[in-house]
Length: 148
Image (cartoon, rainbow, N blue to C red; front, side, top):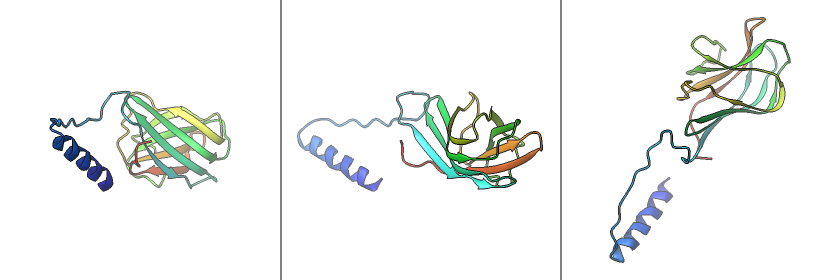
């Protein structure tokens, strides 16, 4: 980030030296679909059943996608993906949002995060079996990384 600030300062100095007027505009986040997407990722941790892979939350304006990659867990008929606010390594789903029922239990899977779901970090992705009322695995999304 410091390198970017120095480059911007050098460019601004060059423009001012050339006699031009420099105007700074701060882009604010929000609902602009042209905004650079951000992402955050975390590895799954096994709880009740072997669960592995990466969970990645990608946010671009109003579009929010949850991507499970190199993912693997035990198939079951009533298994769901939840997003739970905060850091919850124990797999509790109280206060969370059911994102989708799982149809694919290995590989790469993408889900749209429902409108109205708060994606402020930290968030915990929970793989939840409703039939046995148990979390099979979690991934804690803590901080965004550089824009995608």
